[in-house]
Structures are given as structure tokens and as C-alpha cells.
Image (cartoon, rainbow, N blue to C red; front, side, top):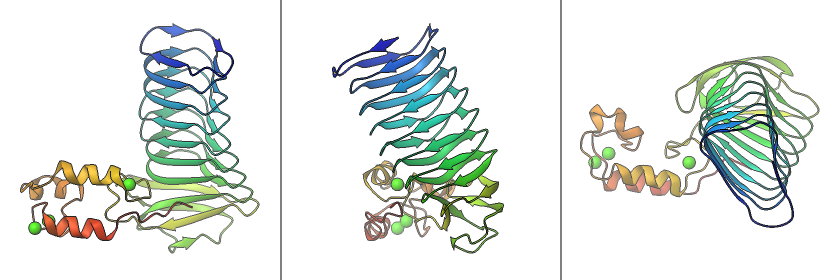
Length: 255
Ligand SMILES: [Ca+2]
Ligand SMILES: [Ca+2]
Ligand SMILES: [Ca+2]
């Protein structure tokens, strides 16, 4: 299935199956909440993509400045993003690797990846949650930031070219992964900002939404400190917490 030209195309895939590739050449909006794409999804222009469920039988590839959010579903092979794409992965399974090229940004806050996390050519990845069964492999002037605590290496850039990294990711997931750095590829270890409630490396409106959802709650002692919004913690979410949140506003560890 294929679209041509510069038309804005909206794809909604909720059920059923497409037995071939899905190719989009315009500026698309692609939302998959179920169903199956039998082979690859290839997005060639500046698209907005959301995948919350369903299956992609082979690879998911973007070639331009797309924004992609993956929160569920299964991708049976790899995710590849290029050319200043912004990819946020909060859930779902990838049965092979995740690769970024040409200044793309990848934010991994959840889900599972059965093979490697690879960055190339000034691309950047942040790992703050989820499960990686392969290796962290930054290549050629790229960086993987690991966002968490309790690492077996000091905070900052890892000097070793290869090894095993252990610790706890920002969302609480355990980390135990091998790494190999190639051609100036860097791995940077950073502690989480306490006001970054969704662990994406920046304190912004998405985090404020989490704070607002607990505003004036007084049950934080039995609610896991209200997802960390009760900073003290003193059991409630009130002006003290808002002040603390505001003092971290727009702190950003991403390049
Ligand atoms: Ca955030
Ligand atoms: Ca409080
Ligand atoms: Ca208080």
C-alpha cells in the first residue's frame, strides 16, 4: 500500500491486516492502535506517528523529520529513524534493534528491545526505562545517555570502550547491559531530575500535567509519593511541591 505526492494523508490502522509494505511519501499522520502490517512501514516525509498496539511484521523506518511515539504493539524486526526524527518509545516490543542516524533523537522510557540500541552520525538516545537484551552501541560522533542511578561506573562519560553496565534506570527498571563504543561514540551516565516525572530528560508541560493530576491530594503516603510529585515527601501535593517543581522548570539534559 502506497501514497504518493505531497498530500497530507491520515492512516488509521485499528484492525485487520495489510499483507505488504505500507509506504508514505507525503506528510502523514499515522495512527496504529491494532491490526497488522505484514511487512515494513516506511515513512519518507515529515510525519506524526503513534503506535499503541498491533503488529508490524518487519521493520519500521522513517527517513525524514518525523515525530514518532510507540507505546505498545510488537515490531518484529528493527526500528530505524533518520534525519532529525524524534522517536519516543514508552512501551511495546521490538524483536530486533533500535537505530538512529543523522541527528535523530530517541527517548526510551519503557518497552523491550531484544537486540541493540545503536546511534550514529550525531544522533542521540536517552535510556531511562525498559529492557534492553542486546548491547548499547554508540558509533561515529553519537551519544547514548543512560538516565538513572546506582551505576557500576562513575557519573559522566564512560572511558572504557566496552564492558557491562549495571544500575537502576530512572523509572525503576533494573539495568544490566553490555556496551561497545566505536568512533567517538559516547555513553554518558546521568542522575534523573526529580521533577522529570515521565523520565524523558526534560522538565516541561508533560511533567506539570502529572503534578496537576495530584494537586491537593493528601494520600501520597499510600500512593508511592504520588509518582514522586510529593517531593518532601510530607504526604500531600501543595504549594511546597509546586515551588520545588518550578525551580526545576525546563531543566534539560538532552543536547
Ligand atoms: Ca519530562
Ligand atoms: Ca508535599
Ligand atoms: Ca505540604
